[in-house]
Length: 314
Image (cartoon, rainbow, N blue to C red):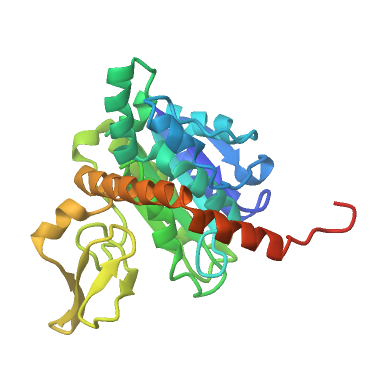
């Protein structure tokens, strides 16, 4: 049983400490543990080159082509049975270093729907196909987010999207507001300790593992974040993408949706395959547009109109 803890905070700060607290609990219960600091690594942002998509369409393993420490981190995550994240809260959400790995990890190269298509193509082409570890159903993630005020309303959605892409189960999703002094707050330290305990319990009995965090408002994914469409009656869960209605029932806010919406949910294989088909249609439309004189003329005009500014000497 291997559990890794990944901290996105400053060296030996709150996030490092609470990540180690959870790992300490896991080790006491017999797990092998490892600690990683994201700020120690060379991690570059995704540049939208879609090289991974090209490999998927050929049935090849869609590894990222950017040269940095991400392949090392990716391997650490894939070889672990459980991953515990401890992240600071910046501007209500996840910090930039987490968003970098989210864009690199939680994109086409690790998406269960895209990889299902890739595997089907690989069976026809004889290419190696995607990494089988991305299809594990006994893989678990937990998230701890630590902030210094009550500006923390978006971070949970940021975290949960990381688990949604490969369809790995989230066990804990802790958001600590007003917690600059968390190391000395015994109750909160114990909560972080319990994150490690809950992870080990899930790994020992994966068939019965369940979400142990805040029940939230969305009954499907536990999210509290919603996008309200112009039609006031409609709301979209920002995590699972289910469309429904926000209602007040017995004095409490509830999110209700038709059962048919479940097959469209972004954390189900059916929903992901619908998304894959949508992407295929849009990419095909773009490919056709690029063949037109209208596209070429407009792009040439934009390029000649204005060049990007650079620092002196660049």
